[in-house]
Length: 136
Image: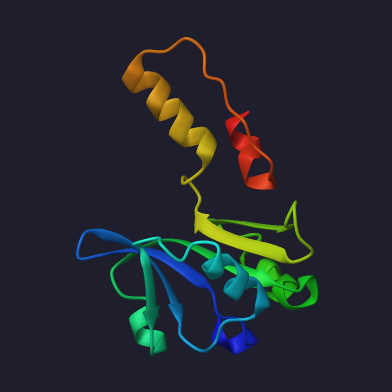
């Protein structure tokens, strides 16, 4: 995504441990704010190089920033058969979030899996963003 001068937060498993990786010193205002609110999160993993960002098993990307910048990423992924891509304004802030994940990695699919495993008849869910819609 450096092609667009956008540096994502990458959620991955590195040596079987969940991490949130980003390129150190490439943080924009939105990424800095995100990281500042999670300083004690043991998953945080700043990296120096692009190659390190994509190590391990990747499962989710998020880019935080201006809509004009993120629309390029959204346009690239929106019709993908492999990925789901959402673009929305942060509900509580001015910045936008562009999220990219495997097609099957939805909250709706997760709830249905839990419902089956727990043999539940009903599920109650709450959400405040576009990526929450599949779980309703």
